Image 1 (cartoon, rainbow over the protein chains, first blue to last red):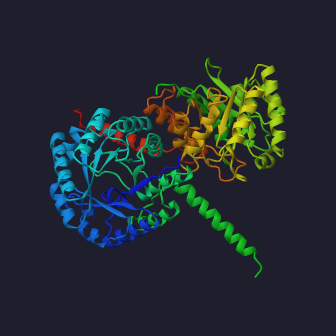
Image 2: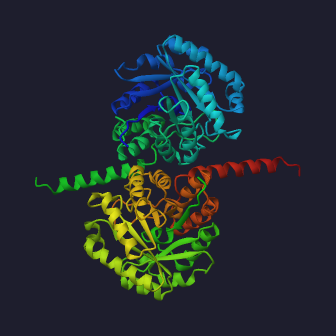
Image 3: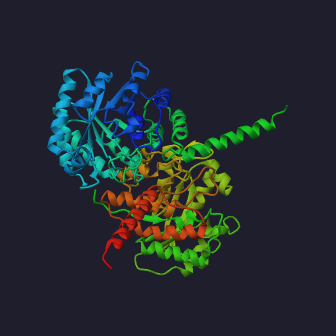
Length: 314
Length: 314
């Protein structure tokens, strides 16, 4: 498998939106800089949601204005509805993401709309974005399971994905929002979609709540997915979904792909610079499933170097 | 995928052989009882290795004698050589496992033999076991990488596996002894073997050193593997291989398979009884990648029950 995989770093949005410690705009920009240095070229950086609902992302305009323009780098902003779209594009966003929860209850609880109303809002914003030349992604959220309704029917996920593509979405992210999926389910969803809308427009957005994210990513990859979301340090969790824990850690995913010979353009070792800064900013330990091994390996290497230095003649 | 998967629980051998805290025979028997209660039917319980080299397993005879005879339950004992085979079978072992490291250096460092010598010893013991009606498994160790030689050539793994099968081995366990493999490598090894010796005789023995074990297990499953080794609580690590960390946790593997609709006959919730006892015995926290989520879920459930109890009329 020599294909290339693209990773959208969602830590600045999905990762920070739920943190109890606020992060200043200047610090978010430092994090973004380190993520770019590690080789990321696609970042979902914020959400134009109500500052009252998500104060952590109240600086959306300032953040977007402060990000460095770089060739080949795309910044995406989440927009909850048409008002968010207008705020986002007025602030300069050239790529937006919409969230369509796959179940009736999650839509009602999160945005006080029925599934049908939410679908209509998404179609409307997608149409506007297409008309204005703005790149638009749709999340199909709770694609594996809903915290209120249990397992999400596969046919629903396929139908909503096809509807968003038909409405003009450039990309659809199949999102296991609460990390309740498993590799067989991911394989089945992707396989079902591959025969219809194809895998080119798809991304897979996974959470590692139950330790299965890397196995799900591998299952998705084998089924044809070549674009994944991930959050550095395994930051994340949905503030509205009970039971949600961290996103799939970017360093875990890049490491697994790199070991498997699959190119991402990202250096997982350098991702730890962003993880280290986030640990300082958020005042808690971060890191995915390979962080403990890597830190131990680094400590051993440092010890060996120090021993060699002490043995050198003065 | 509705196939059935068989898991060999190796915690009592691969898990305990490297622990700094000794575990009494009676406590090992209590652990074995809990593992049987959880539904395990295949256990590698000890090694007839020199008690000086591995004092943790010096009670091999007493342990084997103390295990309950149950219909459909197989106990396996590791035997390093013909002397170990004779000790093991004299103690009543009806299933033995041999270790053949796939690289020259690992054989020299571990058992002071060349690879050719080690192969000859394995063939000889396998021949004797077959003649005496003893079930015999061969491990092809360091099948992904060797701590001294780096990545192990695929052709070597295939050749050694075929040689052990030709010699009469009932089963060959492809072992990523130091947890240095990746899902693509596992897929490639299993696919290469599937076309020759087939997958029926194969087992996959994984370590979770770098967080990739579940993804490797999934890749092996998709390539046709239906038998895995695992250790409850993620216990483990090879005492001779630098960098080795815990085995793939049995509860992680059973959980992933169960969620994916694949039957193992094992209840992952009940495995936590054995994990809890091992934590007491070894005086340290244990558990694989889903343990934190499960413990949190249980705590929430207990809180909810307590709240409901307090609201009930007296």
